[in-house]
Image (tube, rainbow, N blue to C red; front, side):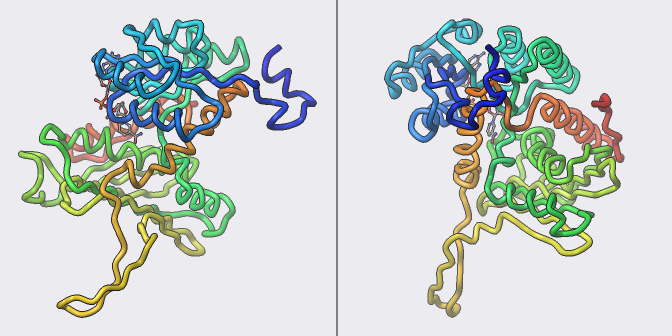
Amino acid sequence: MTTAETRAGALPALADVPVRDLRVAVLGVGMMGADHVARLHSRVSGAQVVAVSDAFAEKAEQVAAGVPGCRVVGDPLAAIADDDVDAVVIATPGQFHEEQVLACIERGTPVLCEKPLTMDAGSSLAVVRAEDEHTARTGRRLVQVGFMRRFDPEYAELKALVDGGGLGEPLVVHCTHRNASVPPYFTSEMMVNDSVVHEVDVARFLLDEEIAAVTVLRPRATRHAVADQSDPLLVLLETTGGRVVDVECFVSTGVGYEVRTEVVGEDGSAMIGLDAGLVRATAGPAGASRSTGIAPDFRQRFGRAYDIELQRWVDAARRGEVDGPGAWDGYAAQAVCAAGVEALHSGQRTVVRMEAR
Ligand SMILES: NC(=O)c1ccc[n+]([C@@H]2O[C@H](COP(=O)([O-])OP(=O)(O)OC[C@H]3O[C@@H](n4cnc5c(N)ncnc54)[C@H](O)[C@@H]3O)[C@@H](O)[C@H]2O)c1
């Protein structure tokens, strides 16, 4: 019996969810994957990490050792094909995602794939099509993409405000995305593909529209920029409905991780990301002042979002559903970033080339 059949006429929630925990394999246990394993093991209910796989066996052994009952499987495709694995988290580098996600779809296994879905729009579209074909046969979706900001309580509140009409018609979105520093290999192209990609998803999420065109301006670079790179960048996204989103992406501020988003509507505006948790008053040589902390990096700022993302993914997978950004969102982000990189190089407004949904 399919989950959809079980759901018909059944009591909601509890009657819906299989008693057995979701048995999860995590592929790639570097920074993100190891974090996901720790979360699934200690903070998320209804899941058990039963297998990990990593190109570095020692790393996999180390992570598996912290989770009772967790095995190391050398080949990630063998982990996907394992009969004792119900669902998969992919946190390998982006170039391996396509093959691994397609293997999950082929087997009918729910998968949470870290962004990017794949390395380019064409291969992301192929994943969309493969999942569509599976859905046409089974009625089930399988793919969720790791755009975790959608699960951040502040973003969720902003989305509810926009959707509820609390700001009137949204017109403009201002985004700030700053890092204290980045490694020396971090290029301006990576600023678009790895940083601004999150604002691309946020814009699509908040406005419920596709991005139609991208322009990238290169203001005077900071002296702290990685050699020969443009930092900061100012990225303008135009939506299909004529709204404009501006993104200041600045990855060598020397300060901290600052992600702010402000939606300006016909009837008001709302901003998130001020990190205004604890406001501390202190006396100093220049007089008394008030200050708040700034998250050092994305793991602190979005820790709660990752918790909620994983819990909702587990709950949905146990019901046979997907409850988050899907393959289409991964494809759209890739298409917009491809236009963004083109715009970065050409200095021209660049139209996003995307298939109709
Ligand atoms: N959503 C977010 O906020 C966020 C943040 C950072 C990174 N990411 C994404 O998460 C993914 C992983 O990033 P990371 O920073 O953890 O990288 P990382 O380099 O720290 O970890 C990647 C791990 O994968 C392993 N690996 C490499 N090739 C493999 C293969 N073929 N099969 C199995 N394991 C393999 C590596 O040995 C490494 O341990 C990337 O796609 C990245 O873009 C997402």
